[in-house]
Length: 130
Image 1 (cartoon, rainbow, N blue to C red):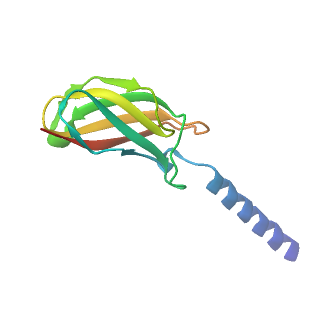
Image 2 (image 1 turned 90 degrees about the horizontal axis):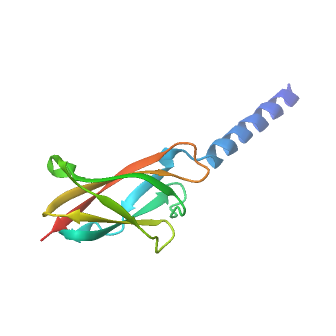
């Protein structure tokens, strides 16, 4: 009986360690580097991708989808084109877009993270002022 208890305890410890070591897409989040911008053309919007478990930025993710629109202000059909810019800091992803009027914009993103099977998706809200 004691041998069975030790084996069960060892199996439980191993499964806990395995689940803690493997991340899931929900363990990542995008956050704005600066949530307040000036409206205009060719505005640079930057987001940081962080690992929620460690709090550290995630470098070398591949952004596979982006969209900027005014969904937070009820105008999802009002969208702008998004152009990726070179990374200046690990874990920070920058884009050029137009924010033609004052209001709230939503930047929606999908990314592939190294070692993660699922696609990481998220969005950030930025505010454009006059």
